[in-house]
Length: 536
Image 1 (cartoon, rainbow, N blue to C red):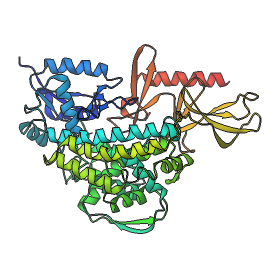
Image 2 (cartoon, helix red, strand yellow):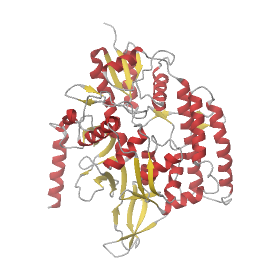
Image 3 (spheres, one colour):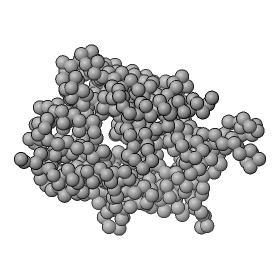
Image 4 (cartoon, rainbow, N blue to C red):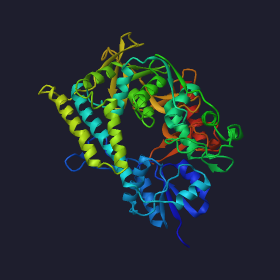
């Protein structure tokens, strides 16, 4: 019996859809994202040797690599169906290098939509890895790494250890600091990824992170009564319906609330005239920032959501009721950059570099020369900035920051400190008063109960509790929320950890069909009883 053909994809939801579409003729396995990456702790790029990068296996991906190596050895023919963009091409090439697949063979399949006919056509038209697209993606990746790493080195002396910012995030931070004008803005009538994020923010109040997450689910496949298929084409391109006759109401029972809302918005935008006017109220929010980036001709759709999340997590900006404000630390960041890196992180330089990256993908420019051109200017500015530091400059540690919160034990102010397990609040009257309290840290994950953002609280001993930012929502979990979402309902997945055992993954939505009879139910119920007994 001939060995099955194997298809590699980047996540489990997409793998499940392809299995259903192709039947038993193919084995479909997920890589669970990238398998290798450059270490975060060091530059890992040899600037003297054509910018050769040192990629290491990502922590936690060892078991996946082992499983994939066996699967590829047992396979008849191997295809790679990662997303049809630069990141997907780079992952496909990474798979070829790791598993010994000939990148010049017809191993790469491009699935712009996940339906039975389109997937079969994609397999019939399999092609070799496009190394120009791979090099273009890597050029951007390497420049981002070089810039953020060296800025982090400069900040460790100028501000304190642990701060860094990349090309897009530096530009975004500066934009947030500027006054946002009121008025109207017209978006194009084509439903692109960026226009969907704008419309979803305006009409559904969805955050960009939430919109991208749900759009990916609609592309990767929905279970329509045991008939898996994608509802829209790949979101990073011009978005289209895979079936114009599939109305939102006809499939409402198979979608969770957020999926239905976004699909309804997409369906309406593609079948009816939608309002292209965006009203700006003068506050610094998602709509004003998105439209400002549009005015600057910046390609932001793939990076905005992650950029905002990072700026909030690093406490460079605050977010209250959807309005962004620069923090004191954010002002320090901008001040340190000003006068040295203004040109390196400008919209004009950002756009020019991206244009050169496109030329690499088209075979009109060489990767090394494009990276070298940017780095030559950036490194000069970096050296000028470093030269302004005192000769005896030392790496600065995170300072103690006073807050407005009052210690309930002695009446002194609480200060924000950084410990082994992250930030926490401590009494400024230490050592007389040793009171400490958890500090709330925003995460990128979404509450499975109400759709708000989850926040993380670190307690003594390093244990983290995840709760919802909405005060009227009582959701809480000691288990870690994951970037993965539930294949059945789209809610955030959680990992319940056991000592010496593999974590148990489960959907955070207790009403999800996957939770029926799930062993986590008893575990969580028993934990709840123990907490209640302890309180009594």
